[in-house]
Amino acid sequence: MATIHDVIEPTPARDPYVQGCPSRDVLDQIGSKWAVLVIGELGRHGACRFTQLRDQLSGVSEKMLTQTLRMLERDGMVLRTVYPDAPIRVEYQLTPLGQTLRSPLKALTDWSVQHIEDVLTARKQYQERATRPR
Image 1 (tube, helix red, strand yellow):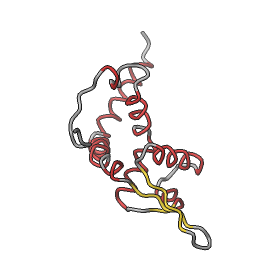
Image 2 (image 1 turned 90 degrees about the vertical axis):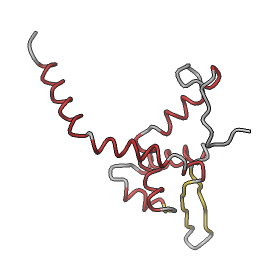
Image 3 (image 1 turned 120 degrees about the horizontal axis):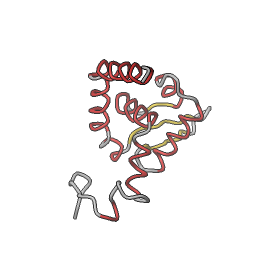
């Protein structure tokens, strides 16, 4: 029986390069800017309240954070816990499935930091070529 840690080769029914494949949808969801940042934040800090996440993720709107958290909860990566305090307290944390994303997403984040100067240089060169008269 395969576990979450086994490497599974894509099959025609689970090939993200084939339109309509559910794994393509998952890649689209977890690859979104806010999902990457929410998973990173929950990985760094553990359980967080909505306002903590909003404050840590500079630039995210409440609507986008809500949508991202709902999508991650729907896909089994985030657990939403409601505490019946007065006022009601809600916390979000990564599930074991969500925890498995920490390492690959951290590698992407580290790559982006390590190579930002290369990317900025490439963008500048591209813009210069694009605006040059032909």
